[in-house]
Image (cartoon, rainbow, N blue to C red):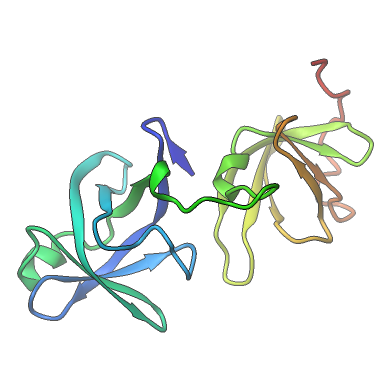
Amino acid sequence: MTTPGGRVHVGRIARAHGIRGGLKLSTFDHEAPSIRVGVSLHLLDENARPVRTLKVTRVQRQPDGFVVQAEGITTREAAEALEGMQIHVDAETLPALQEGEFWAFEMVGWQAVDENGQALGEIAAVQPGPAHDFLTVRTPGGDYDVPLVEALVVRMDRAARTVVLRPPEGLLDDVELKSPPAR
């Protein structure tokens, strides 16, 4: 998810690590290419209010995430004070993508349509899951989470800002289908 300042929510600080201010990170992407030495981590509280910015000085990859050291965090107590904070990075720190690729967070705000082009709603969020991500489709009747899997997500069109869905029977039955907006 991007924030108004062009930042991307990449995870949270799970806990303190060690006695010298290490931060154990829980990231949405297990590869987390944006977590590297020199990157600024913008920390937000549980209400998404900015708290502080930390510059990463050391990164250690572990099987279940990352441990980082950051400027100004040198004690366990300082690290513990940051537990639970959301981590955002500047969008421009993300690696370049191949042609036709895009980041999942870019889909927020795109229109969700069925295979006939009938409007289903708007992508309100992309939520991480244990096996795959979920698209939260906001409709007049409420929000629906659609697994981001090939069987249900037929195609994504960056130019048209649409996601074509093939929702399983019953998932969006109460959504009033509308013709796609004229462009």
